Image 1 (cartoon, rainbow, N blue to C red):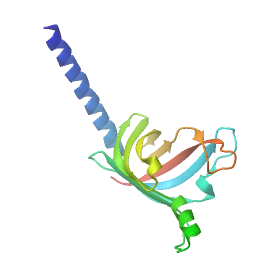
Image 2: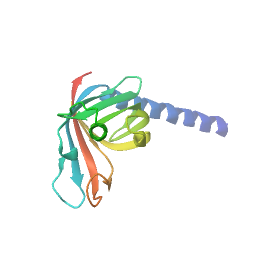
Image 3: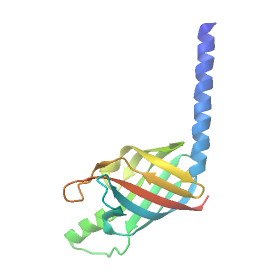
Image 4: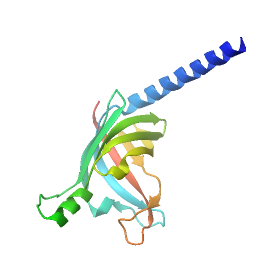
Length: 162
């Protein structure tokens, strides 16, 4: 009898957790326009646009639990020169994967990314306020800046469609 009760309790807990995650995921469903992409410094330096550029792009969260993002720095120009193509690569971001949102934390299992270093589990702070979403990355050394200071990204979106 105890075993049945334990199994029933486990199933109940699993179902309730799944329902809660599905309800949280539903809050993100839609198309989100990138509003700003900033680098914040742990040492107190003023935040500034990521890589010194304004970014444009979209992120989509589907009912099925998939997300897709494509962002680029404004002003990119086509080029056939190898060094310019490397700059073009650094000035864009594209990825897709499955997601789950659990009240303040977003977890994306990235399966395809422009930069393979982004594949795998990404956990971020998600702050959702109506049709505004801010994603905050963890603090990490930033190899793109001299001295590799500890930084994190503040990525802000506005919902444009549900």
